[in-house]
Length: 138
Ligand SMILES: [Fe+2]
Ligand SMILES: [Fe+2]
Image 1 (spheres, rainbow, N blue to C red):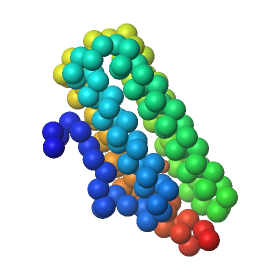
Image 2: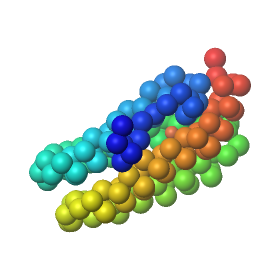
Image 3: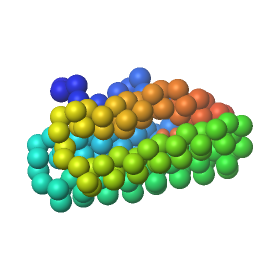
């Protein structure tokens, strides 16, 4: 597998199936964006994948935050702040994608800012959250 694409793997499991599925989908959509940018598939394809990704990010963060509130996760506010920071960063990238040309350096920046961030976030922050949720969820 090309290292520019990040795949979900078992080590990233939160042990909450629904959340894991969403994380897999997120990597899939980031990869689709990277692929569209790299293969110069045309701006329309790039913008479409970007839009799908954006919607999915909002859905996923929303669900995690809902579960945290529902089960009184003590780190809720800090976790939410990280999601918000990421969304802010995403919007900045989105503008660059809309206005710019997808050269190989920019594709690399996208990988770093999206997949690498997601990987680290899942591995530490989401796993921590899931540990708490699993104690209280039915
Ligand atoms: Fe997550
Ligand atoms: Fe999260």
